[in-house]
Image (cartoon, rainbow, N blue to C red; front, side):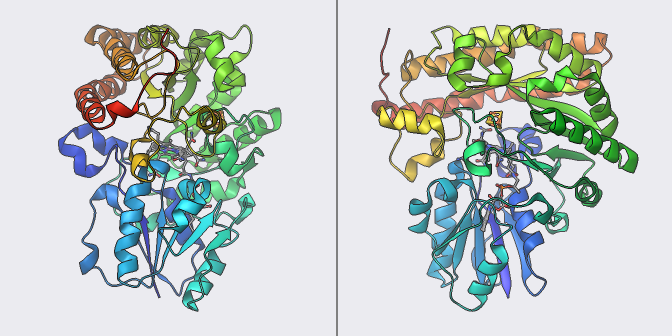
Length: 463
Ligand code: B12
Ligand code: SF4
């Protein structure tokens, strides 16, 4: 039996677009979901994984699979349905799973033979058995997995060519920020994989550099942090010489021992969601950790830097509490905090989030011809109606933010400060130039977006 697992192309980046920006090579990440599915698949299945971001293959010339499994984030949904249509025309059954199929199950069911919602560990062997017997059900729900049931992902099935390997050590997040799908999808309970499994899997990762995909590597409670320390100790002790980057909340900076152990285990960069420069904005998104009174973000970033760990900061533009000028303000605040790179995203109602419910009931979702419009749900396009911004207004804020933060003078200042603090000036320089070089691509993309969707986009309340 042949199983073909497919990651549809990502509208934002792919190796194919490397001609548009050579930095894309560093932005194509492994589809870990499919590697985990492969790890759950019994040996009688011959498995291939296709990552369309490495180049879409000619499906007609591939050996005919007996079953196709497709994963998709929302932004990939259209391409997922195109691929599904191709195989269904050939009579090959198609199963779809992942975040989009879970949040938009009824829609996905119109395009594929079977949908698997939530996590696959508890149900995938059953799906395969039913497929073998030709009796696939229309819908399976995997629920939330026990972390000891997460298998070793099949790192051997993807070709070389990725800049980073990938691994997961925890799932779930109790914080339930309004714009984020993680609590709705992976649950509020913070679940941690057994440490020996993580170390064993890290050994199997071929790449020297690794993305730890956890949404919040260290968790929120003292026992989570104690476990994170144990994990870092175990990784350091295994002496794997991996360098890794991860996502965490700002409380990562609050514990010197944690930072020292992370660095010793190979942590080289951390992605932190600051979300908003204003207390009103933080309240609006529900990011509780960032709201703690007396928190000095600049000092927090400095503490992380002292352990030679780079900080990538993320902010959102388009909150109801944002006023015109927010783009420039974010660039200034992020520079004051001292982050090495800045990722600014447009407030986007993703299906399944509290933000989606709120905007939908207020009639504020501007791009709502689905599935076609999902291609714009990349967090880079204004797909909703924003309280204080017209379409041109919000695009201007995004451009102004990047133009300010990635001005040559600011880049040089950051590189100089990195040099001065004996950190990693070269990586800071390369990271910053990579973002800067994408500015003209964003401008082009916004112009195209305005041409095709501009008329569907009024602001809620110009003031
Ligand atoms: C790593 C990651 C990335 C990596 C992508 C790596 C990759 N190639 O997949 C990068 C940094 C590139 C990225 C980019 C983006 N991401 Co992202 N990302 C994640 C993150 C943190 C982890 C995903 C992961 O690898 N999990 C580990 C695997 C094992 O879990 P899993 O994918 O859920 O798979 C399990 C189940 O879903 C299921 N399953 C999955 N697929 C399938 C398929 C079948 C057939 C079956 C049966 C089961 C099944 O089985 C698996 C095992 O249980 C998630 C958060 C999260 N917790 O999911 C956000 C998340 C998926 N990302 C999100 C977003 C919004 C984006 C961006 C749009 C944002 C941006 N502008 O940067 C882009 C879009 C990229 C794109 N492809 O279009 C949202 C997606 C919401 C949505 N509705 O789409 C999430 C949920 C975070 C959030 N804040 O809400 N992301
Ligand atoms: S944004 Fe981060 S902290 Fe907030 S719910 Fe999502 S994963 Fe948790």
